[in-house]
Image 1 (tube, rainbow, N blue to C red):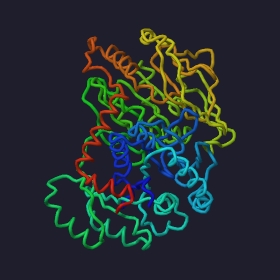
Image 2 (image 1 turned 120 degrees about the vertical axis):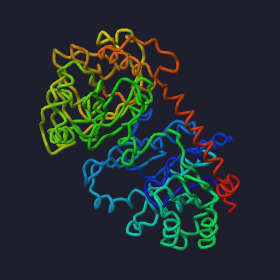
Image 3 (image 1 turned 135 degrees about the vertical axis):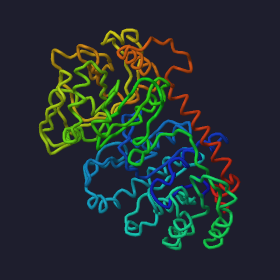
Image 4 (image 1 turned 135 degrees about the horizontal axis):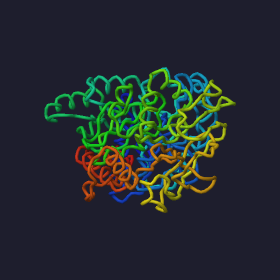
Length: 505
């Protein structure tokens, strides 16, 4: 093996591959290596727009941040974004190829192998090391033919593999043993180390099992990683955040849980604000008592709007806004706030025209072209309570289909320059929308929103101390990456890991 890469595979989904990959990226960076992450194919609705205006999965963006390098679509050449229970949009090197069913994509996947291999080779040539992440399990024997992301990728990169199992869900030794034994002999030979992940308790209790699994498989256990509270962004479909309540502040924030919710990481910074209690609302009663309601992004704006209506969620949202409560829509949630949504070409939905919530004076028309761009602009006042931030810079990224047409009643609170004004609000200033993802990351807008909610609730004004102010996400992420790396470094036999990376084992 060439000693240029190391790959993390798992006994199944959600065993912690993404976090372990991020940890190794940070550890290698701390040790002086120029390192990059790579995942041949990712399925997620949490995506990101690169500086070149190309779309990639956020998991590899997080890993790139841990590595201290600029995210690039070369780190995630294939992204699948589910559009329904049966179809996904296929994005190759940051650009959509079209929508495919699972069967259609299964037959098409072999055509992508050359693209993936060439992309990986270009990336590898630029770095000292590459941390490759697999997907699901390599032991899905029905998917071996046409595999793009597990053992085929290990062979294409000539990479040794660390196999991780999740002990928290139980049956970890059976999962490790079964995974290895279902592989072909040449695939099995690539696994150079086993990792027990998400352990709670005294590792001494595990030691007999560790020795037995080593004896049975002839593969060393390179570490037992404990459960860690490092706060690193989740992948969307498996996030535990949807069922948790964050914080204990006086301002109640309800983020509406959409069927095809995307980029929910926009609200991580707000959930960390000391003045906020944040939860995800799945039923009408989850909106009761909310001071701020947020409609997040979605891959299927129209279908999710119809789903909200079927779940009786729309009426309480509108009542909240009509009563003067704060309502924020981001991306697809922003589009829902308008008067009318049209999809004449069926870009997102079979429904060609649907009424919006009617809270902003605008209409949205969907078209095949998608806007993916990093955006920078300024807050331009808008509501009276935002005047103090007028002229302040703001930055983030946009990923959306759909063009807005504004009526005379529209007001604006954000100017992102070309292709025009973004960020509409109503005359009362309590309903706001924007296409900008990452709008809370620097903390200023979060502080302003919480301050306004306190005033509307009749709570006293607060002169925020440094401990009471919103979190700056860039600094916070760095702290959490270092925490994660410390836990993983102390848990793994790093001498063995480096030996595996160098191809010595």
